[in-house]
Length: 361
Image (tube, rainbow, N blue to C red):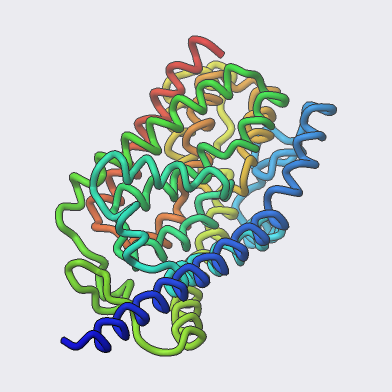
């Protein structure tokens, strides 16, 4: 090869590297601007409210009552409207970032940091989740986008789970509204879920790659970028994300809103502190969907009506971690056995947190 050819090749590499940096900076600026508007600035004011008033609002689940309304179309609609009013900005941002990560961030960069099935990649995924502060449903599209770029199962799960359970704003609210004991428990169980469960989920994934139902044809090393204009690729990614996420999301929220009274039943005075109550509420909390930090007024309301600290401990872990809608969003991005492993792990940790809560809260 002639010296001219070598020089041309080096120039092309420099151009490609510069373009990659520019695109990554664009993604970072969009993420920072979006999170500042949707999360960081509003949470600053909510933290002040929590510190001065020791509340962040009423329970979205039952309002000021001990039990949820009877199942009905109205109950479904009322909950869906209250829920989406609270999360729609974050949901839009999650879908936007989930589609943009596929076209703006080079695959090589993601694979270098998050592509391995080791603890380092899992820990980096968890660390990347902390600024997001999103609920499980709003973080799910970004996790799906990461999986389409062939990020490892452990790293993408750590990002998805870390957003709700390691949310620093929620921890601050919790300390002011509930107590430092709740915060400490949340940190401990949140780290176990985000780091340990995500890491061991790699063992269930095997050598799986992203299925074609989720992404385009993926080669074994997943370093070849998609062809075509940037805007065209983003529109294709965003439209695919919308079609696969929004319908199941909306319908499942309606169904869960209608079924609130069944999922969180009214119990007799003696049963409110029993093992059966902890089991019921751990499973219900795992399936139910709430906005960011909504578990705090829910737990406070249940405690005020005589529910035991075991129930509070179970909900502390299960309510924010995952939900039926968020599971539906990510189910095609992971092997089925990984999804089941995460689901059962959240329930198990909820039960363990309930047992610990009954002793120390």
